[in-house]
Amino acid sequence: MPLAPQIIFDVVTKSVAVMFDRDLVTLEGPFASRTEAMAAAMEECAKRGWLSADRAGRSEK
Image 1 (cartoon, one colour):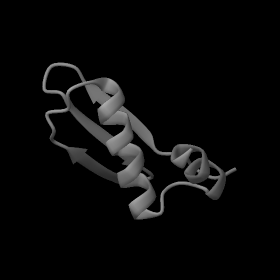
Image 2 (spheres, one colour):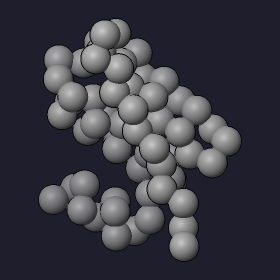
Image 3 (tube, one colour):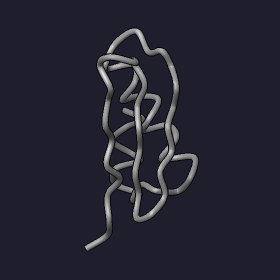
Image 4 (cartoon, one colour):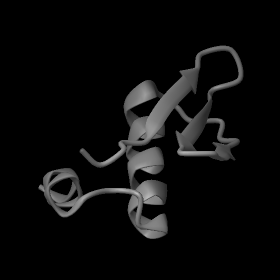
């Protein structure tokens, strides 16, 4: 079973952290909403190749 990235939105700083395996990336933001932050996190995961093909396809729909 492939690993999936973990995405955590910080409501205080309006930033988002993405963890995959042992890599941690923080997107500082501030993001206007959780939805905007999650979209940015998914885009970052796709850029880094951290999403499986089926997940990447769903995020583009």
